[in-house]
Each structure stands twice: as structure tokens, then as C-alpha cells.
Length: 293
Ligand SMILES: [Zn+2]
Image (cartoon, rainbow, N blue to C red; front, side, top):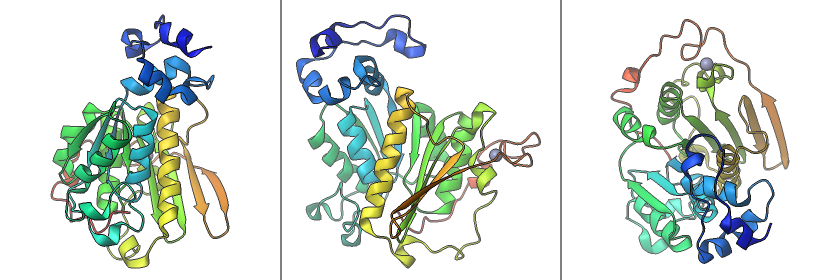
């Protein structure tokens, strides 16, 4: 298919909001996204799906930086960035959406500036607020896919519970030292494990060190954030085999990836037949996050 043929396509017979979606692209969009449109698995329809999508990124840090940059470059229509922190010098070893000149600025606003420079076609919603239960209720319903780029168990469990209860896919990555992990939780579909099937409760405070205590190789956050972006794009495009019900583990020192299958826990408090978590009330008054990747 040539780019001009792709530009003249109109959506016919596709599911959901794709029915209403325009497949018309400006000349500039065709040039910007030409390497996507050339891919049979993406094409003009896939690029239109990306343009119609809304993705929320929680944490504009080490994971959120490459994640937001690649999703912006890919032409996701609307990106929401949630971060209440101010940029610090110690962030810049890995949080590559920011600049030295923007130290002291809000990180969601700083990252948004980078995204606007990369791709002005993308709408960026800046949410300079803490991701607490109220923010989860306010923000998550307005997005199609939610990404966890934080590094604290309070937010991780809040997002896991909120996405499950609100029926949203959660693309969740974590990093520490030289290792990373990644999974996609889609537990509300009734067949796949939720995040609490994997970890029923957060570990006691202080048991698992944070990045600010144990350190992290900056490039490891770059790889994991980029893998996270790839999973988001696969979900929106409906291509490949997403990491639903699977956990990807990467050891950078051994240069080794492993994928393990996750099982549903029939006694799970969130997705089991006798689930007791029905709302976010357990997350009210959540503790101060300790660190962002
Ligand atoms: Zn579960």
C-alpha cells in the first residue's frame, strides 16, 4: 500500500469507536508516521487507532521518560502525565525526558515540554498531583490504557486495584539495580490473573529496598520503559502476544530475558469468587511515595 492509498482509506466495518474514526492523514502525518504505516501489522488503520487512543502515564521518571517519548513519537492522540514531584539533579542520571535547565520544575510539566518538542500533534494532559485514591477515580476512567512508572508499593497497589475495578488494562514495569520486570494486567476480563494474584499484599515497609536506597543503572530504566511502550502499542493495535498473564524478567548483567506464566489465585481478594476488595477505600490516606524510578 502506498502512503497516498493509505491516506484515502476510510474506516469500514471495524469494531467500537474505530467505526467513527477518520483514516484521513495530513501530508505531515503521513511523513511522520510513514515507517509505521509501512508495517502490515500497523498500516493506516493502526496509525488511526494510535491517534484515537488515550494513555495515562503515572510517574514522569526513569520508566515514564522513555515510555512517554516513544508513545508521543508513535502518535498516541492523548497522553496524560501524572507526577507531583519537582525535578532534582539526582533524577537526570536516568530520567531522560528532562533537562538540567528544568531542575525545580514539576516533572509532569517538564516531560510535557519534551513531548511537545518531539511531536506537537500529540495532546498532553499535565496532572501535577499525587496519584492517590481520589486521583485514580478522577483520572483513570478518561484513559484507555494505564501505565505504572512509579517505584513504590502504595501507588503500585492503588493502580492495580483501580484498573481492575474500573476495567482498564495496566502496563506495569519495575526496576531495581540491574534488573527489570514487566507485565500487563487485564484481570477484569475474568480469565487472567490480576496483580494481587501475583502479590496479594504489599511487603512490609522497609523489607524491599527502593531505587533511592539500592540504586539502579540508568539504562535499565530506559530498556524497561521502552518495553512498556511496546506493550502499550501492541494493546492498542491489537497485534502480537501481549504480556497478559505473564511476567517478563530481565537481568542486565547476564543479558538474559525470561518470561514466566502467572496463575490466577482462586482465593484472590480482588478477582477471586469471594473477592472482598470492592472499592479504593483501603487506599484512602496512602503514605508518601518513597521513590520514582
Ligand atoms: Zn487476582
